[in-house]
Amino acid sequence: MDHQNQSSQSGIVIIGSGLAGYTVIRELRKLDKAIPITLVTREPGYFYSKPMLSTALASKKSAEQLQTTSTEAMAAQLEITIVGDADVSAIDTASQTIETSKGSIAYGKLVLGLGSDQIRLPLQGNAANEVITVNDLEEYAQFRQAIEGKKRITILGAGLIGCEFANDLVLGSYEVDVIDLAPQALGRLLPEAAAQALQSKLSEAGVRWHFATTVQSIDRDGDSLSITLANGSVISSDVFLSAVGLKPRLDLAKAAGILTGIGITVNRQLETSAKNVYAIGDCAEVDGLVLPYVMPIMQAARTLAPNLLGQMLALAYPAMPVMVKTPALPTIVSPPAKGAVGNWKVNSIEDGLEARFESSDGKLLGFALLGAATAQRGAFTKELPAILQ
Image (cartoon, rainbow, N blue to C red; front, side, top):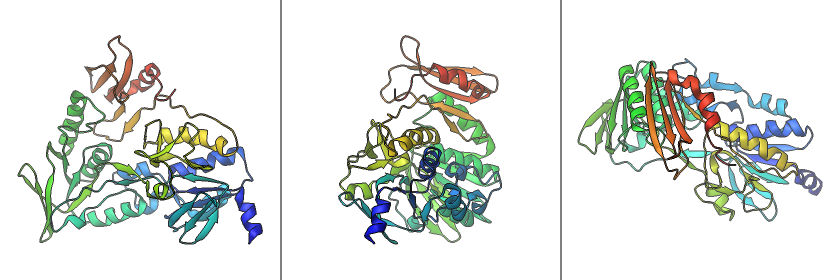
């Protein structure tokens, strides 16, 4: 047994089979074909694109069809060991082992690609337990089952995921109500004029908005749900989807004494406060930033892989605009950095809108491009400062 432990001591163990975990493995394999890599995941270990979950209905893709590569194929393709359907209960940073429901595993280097959970708001009413969240392929399959043969869907949250789901569902000819405490859609990302443009296009597509209010209670009323809002209105619905945002999964790191903030705290090499333990993706916080998007994950994986093999690269983030997948009005946004000082300048163009967030001396610090204006993504992005130099 000792012999086996010795040999895996040099290996890399990755927890989490999302985009972060798998991208790090792909980057590692480009640099080193032989180093032993073990992927531990509570999912089976297949690969799918999580961003597709909020657009799969209109593209007529079932949960099975979103699974692009099976567990066996991933293991063979990347020459890794996959320990699937395994829960990790503890990390022992002193002995460099992790405890899983399938036994203990030793690591030379450990990567936490734990992802994030959908935030669940505590809701009142006898149907509060019927609230659905969609954060992985299995939950998506359950959601598709829940809406089968139904008509009316209510979404709590008008952020990125909420708006994408709303658009996808109206395209699938569902009636959709969206509730948000903010006075507008994409409150953290868009200036008011841009939000208005997106809202009106989605309204035309069939979305009903309920802004500046929240859910008082959700109750079962025969075959339907009765959703009472704080502003007094009542929505009758078949299914209730919560999409109020994500929170990084921190419990495992905290229990192991690893430093956490909003996310698991890492330096620019993506090292945590524990020796030989790294974090990446939705669960990681670099310089106060938690960026749960595809581009930052790709960027971080390209830095992390060489570091796991002994180099010392520092992560830099260029400007990375986010695409909002709302076919009713395609939107690309690069929000100004937290605390950036400046003003939005909005310009309507034919079939679109461009909004620039500029400093007092006219430097571009952020933008939102809607409709036809999205064609200018490249030019606008070039003008932006890097997110992390």
